[in-house]
Length: 113
Length: 113
Image (tube, rainbow over all chains, first blue to last red; front, side, top):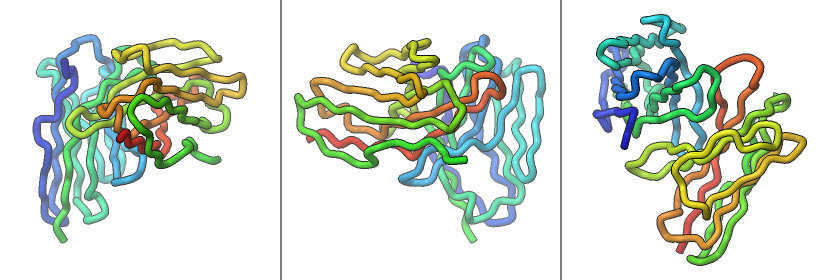
């Protein structure tokens, strides 16, 4: 049973525009959420995280929004750059500091120059 | 500071054989976890070790096992390999005393033929 879902397997965006990647979760006990970016043949790289006490966290071009009532989070990338083209995974944890993250299946972002 | 190092990067095994994968965490990180990535399944948690003890285990059969040494290095073993075990195996480490983010290695690509 997939507790973290990324329903869009792929997304294409023009360079300079906003990329919005979405993630839904089912377990209300999750209290910490992360986004990772993965290039082919490499391990996932941490991007940004948010704890359930916040509804927004921003780091440069990346902003994560959390809507606890809807059990939904999203990653906004503004402006999108060709180097952002990768697979993005959202992950959730039910225990702050726990290592057993639950991952979505990923969304492949393509930024078109 | 060196990142998480995994060896070997690529390997091919035959059905029925066993395989051992190795992981060296980031210096100072005592918590190590393992994930399996397959197409369509995303990243799935295998197990987590801290101070040589398994702290969490995912939903995988007993053919999948691991251990951690006193220097925090970890190994995972898969016995009686099946074709479906072909995947990218990712190791991640975390500083247990601060931070909620795990850092991944580049992974070991296992192909079972």
